[in-house]
Image 1 (cartoon, each protein chain N blue to C red):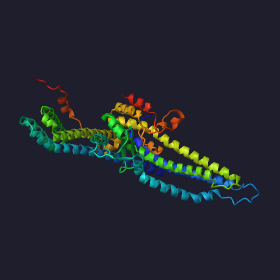
Image 2 (image 1 turned 30 degrees about the horizontal axis):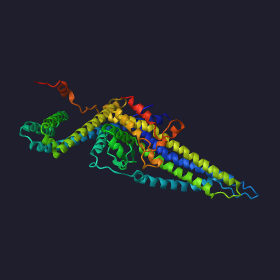
Image 3 (image 1 turned 180 degrees about the vertical axis):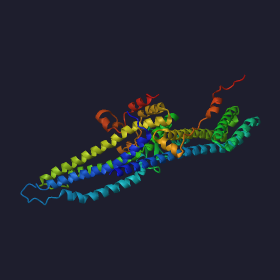
Image 4 (image 1 turned 60 degrees about the vertical axis):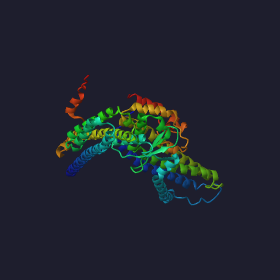
Length: 319
Length: 186
């Protein structure tokens, strides 16, 4: 697999972030257009000798609802953007780690940052015995690395340094920024898909006499579900390659690939964190803390992280 | 028609020259910033040394020679002006401190002293940070040298006075000295 240089990866990530920011809303708009078009074109055949109701002009309706949709998405996005670090902290029940509390960890992070000329991200600790770590944040003020208590106590200095270097590489590559943007958009899609499912359950749209009504609902659901799946795939496709690149970046920073490999071995034994139920937050971790999400083949396509054996294998070939 | 194409090409070339010049400036400043960061760590070490000397003084009179050596090395490091002088002086301070650490092994009371332990811990932390900042300085220097020396950037670099810069290393004199096996006399 091709290793791209650090600055080119950062540039690609920034480009992809902008691309995503543009593509997801377009996808949303396309979805709405299709739905509007189907509703408009099914309005006519009411069935039992009705006078065909005035057909809704698809384009006009679309133009009318488009600004509403965009404003709604924009507000949702801004709120999520502003509050994501608080949400993540609440979801994982973590608290800040002061230098006094754990000099060893703090110094490891500080020294790595000095050797890369980076400013230090905030350090949080998750009170959990399992071994996991993640990075989050969208700009220098909000960058943070969270470590579980288990990983702090069970890994030795070299291994912990490798893990921290891995997370630091994610931050440096702006991976986290791209990931959070895509998570927010997938959240919007999920919301819409759920609304579509609810509308079929409670039958709000479509009168009983209107045979076309059932078809419309079906179309809405299918289109929404398809768009949701596409966005899911996009989200996951983004993160697997980055994990490999973050491993490579970490080896470059610490010059000790074997240390990270041995850390991954220990982590693969116990990555589950009980506190994390949400699938979205799970994705930010160094190894997916929900055991079900691993696997090869089709399931592998949906895996948020590459199989850990493969990661260890890649690292150890450089020993 | 042709004149516009020519003007367009000239404008493009000018823009390209400007962007390369700017990136050279950025890399050079990044390197200088990295060197200033090393200075910060060195200064912190200079500040710690008197405290260390005071703590050790209370525990043994005939360590005076060693303490004197450490104090002298520190003053030399603070007063060094050129980069080469600085590097040499700092190396001497490092070896003096290491000598102190070895001698202290013979004084269990001192080793158990909380103050002393804390100072030692902070000193070794600073040594680690020094190593990290040196690594970053060398990385920044490499990046800068790459830009200055690769084609086509080197055409512009030469015209505007950017040149290859040195690394933070021991220099050829000291390297020779370091590579001589230590004389062991019985």
